Length: 328
Image (tube, rainbow, N blue to C red; front, side, top):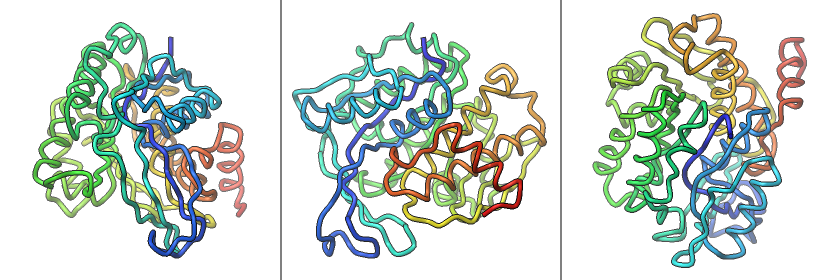
């Protein structure tokens, strides 16, 4: 049985061949496997955590490519379903000169939105130590109910439950509904990872400490992680909080950086004894865990694509050692 399970969308990023262009100005695109929860699954597997993925892709060439990619990176895919009713989602992505993304999604609904509650095997979910999910599969039924069912099982079984709201405004018909669904997803989480923009969207607070306190008011939330791009990260448990500066790296593509961060965060918390020891971690423990997550997120930015850029344990350890030793 896996130590960690990720549930959500698996899709194909079609990345513009040139940097610094709009989608309309791109001469062509290269396919890259992606989808935030799928990226986290690959990140976890690369860091040595036995990981499985739950989701649905189209019974089409892109869906099978996605399954083969996850499998090749050591992710268990026996609960990845194939749909003949919808295609695998596509996301066209262009990168600015700074490596930031401009994207548009195709597939409404895509196969990932058709995951059924009845396709969630509760015993399988409950057998893990950690469960990670996002908000994209709460866009519509039946995937919304499937996501909530799996997260509820994970919470009730005492797993380390991690949630990434991952706001994609263009996918929602109304931002007020997006906020409502994203907040509903907080019911199951112990660990919540948000960007600065997502924190303000959910809580209305522009201040990191104030926003984190509002998230920690939700019954199960015990740790809030805020990614800040080049500025690094912020974390809070209510009892202790801290900030870590970003690491200077040659940025090629920021796609997947947050997912690499999440994978390293979950791996670090599991190594530290979570879920049982989550409430016992002090500032020193958390700073060590977040420093590693910061490093993995930064390292992911040095290559194009998400899954192809996620580092394995040896690469991440070597990078962290180089930073500690004053290397570039």
